[in-house]
Amino acid sequence: MEKGFFYLVSDIFESRYSITDRIYSLLITIQPVFYPILALVASPGAIEAIGSCWDLTQFWPISLCLLNTLTIVVLSRRKCGLSTCVTRYLISMATADLLVIIVDLILRQIPIAYWKAFRFLVHVRVCNIHAVLLFAVTDCSVWFTVTFTFDRFVAICCQKLKTNYCTERTAAAVLGTVVVLSCLKNTFWYFMLNGKYLLSNSPWFCWGRPGVRFSLIWGIGEFLQYLITPVVPFVFILFFNTLTIRYVLVASRARRRLRGPNSGESGRDPEMESRRKSIILLLVISGNFIVLWALHAIFIVWFRLSGLIPSWNYPEFAIGELGYMLQILSCCSNTALYAVTQTKFKQQFKEVVKAPFSLIVKCTQRRGI
Image (cartoon, rainbow, N blue to C red; front, side, top):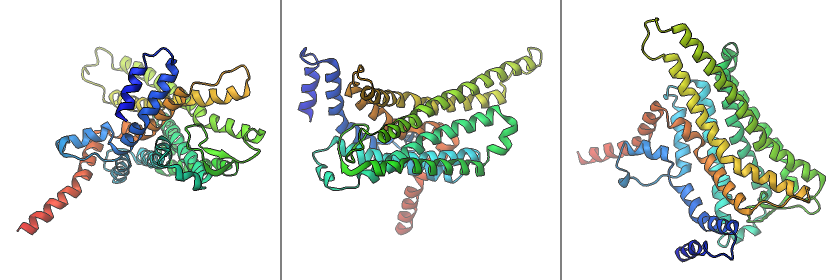
């Protein structure tokens, strides 16, 4: 592995290879290291929270699965100072991200990166079921972000609607609807794909059923797949964030005029400070989705249009490989970017992490007595 990596780096300067071929080869070389590290090593947010408790050199890395599980446990305790509505959305987002890590990163990307070790999967005919689960949990992860963005838009910009909409019951109904629609939409692929794995990072990692790969039904289904996730979420998130930012800016100018220079209030405005923090956190989680999903979205749309328009060239596969890597990174970091930045969440996270070790210390001390 080491020899191959340094050989590839030195080979970049060889003129007989194009720059896209060099990038593609480099990404293929990195993936067998990148995906296991992503699955095993904690995110920076968790490292920061844990590092404040113990010396990091004495702490074993925790997996992203464990990180998301701890996030769900911490949020479920409802001691983070968040509203019940926001808590419901964050728990759902953490759960969806956990499923994406399991179904996509561990069960799809790692076998593709180590395809020689996972050749036996071609004899395990469950790829169409795997595809339905993968597309469903990915849709849930993406659309939970959209529903959360809309909820924050209502909470900040629509005061009259806020009382009735921003409730835990409404959030549960919205999230449940997203889950049901995602499962129903992606059941379609069970009948379009067969159970044989392709073990390739193409948009479809299963073999298609005979006679349907280039049919009109397949084309319509693929078009809707790309349109619903992630094109429409891109539009919704940008639209609601634009309206929210515009509202906050207008409200900020109005409050400054009302306070005035002679109002005697020289300190900070608590209301605007709260709104500013909400906007920053909202933009962080939405911006994370847009930036890390953009390349993957461009590739799959370009790839499909190239098959429909003869004059278009197919996109470079280096774009696709990098897009897949960034998409997985987005799903792994989505919840941590919002929740770990909350002070109370950090404190609760520390308590949950410390709890088993404190219990062990107490039991040891009792036995020593």
